[in-house]
Length: 416
Image (cartoon, rainbow, N blue to C red):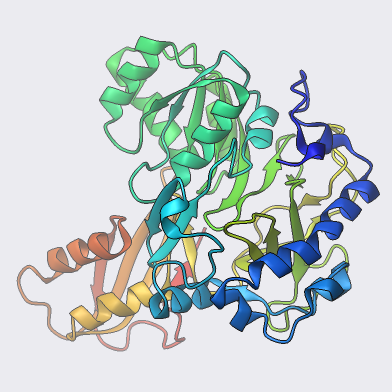
């Protein structure tokens, strides 16, 4: 946390940085770029990735745009070649606070310090305040989602119930027992909890606000949750760079995290696009122990014109506008084409295997489709179990005759 980042908790803003003069904030970030690049190049992975770069010359966005993009696929390859962190850490692995391994697999560390993931500003914008009690329904197992929001809530001064995913009856009991005021998790799981509470005859009237991420929030679901007494705002985050942007006004874009440098680039060239054009979201995070320079998220978005009516002075993203690759985020977890390929290798009797992501009853859902000439007894059940083992997500299996599916080469099709 920099001197400019000291929290000034107010009724509206978490930090004075949120309402800084945009030019002053930009120059602060750009002024830190040479030191970030120099620090990163002390690590062997970054030294190879940025070979030939003079850190002292990286002082503006034009120079930043000349640096190579780092993609998720690169990250997984580097980590496989040089485990566990691909030579990208500038501190010993044992010095980090927590270590995670998300599906992919992708290793991610958590460093020390308050609000290391940078989520407190987004939670504050969603109405979280000192004295609140939150039910945290992001996964606590191997993935960092739960820590994103827990550390942010602690920075605000709120208490957190470590709910995790599943166990709806027990989670409803925890909400009622503690009088939870906030929900943290995917929007569709919030609906499940409210539905289950109604079935059990339990009142969740204390639960009035939520910070959601990791899954789609269509207007119909937002309206349904609001009608049930819970107003929710979204956060956009990645396990590698923390909070990228956060919603302050429903359906009016997401304000960029004031501690990140975000670019919108042409996915094929890595060159920044014209203002307002759709491109891939690329993020640079300033952290001395685990720097991240021009990480391509794979998500498509655009800069929304104008400033937010909330008074924050940073630019806004227009929202999620698709993927630059075939990866997809489902219930807060990424699924990758490589995982579909791994499943296909386990079952040689399958051909043209693809994973379809869709919405069912206001929830994300998966359907694995594959051509199969002859399905033996128990094959569908075995495939379904393999799907769960590989992706950590359940889904239905649809086997069809050869020649049924389009030979388009797509491993993941997002229908949401």
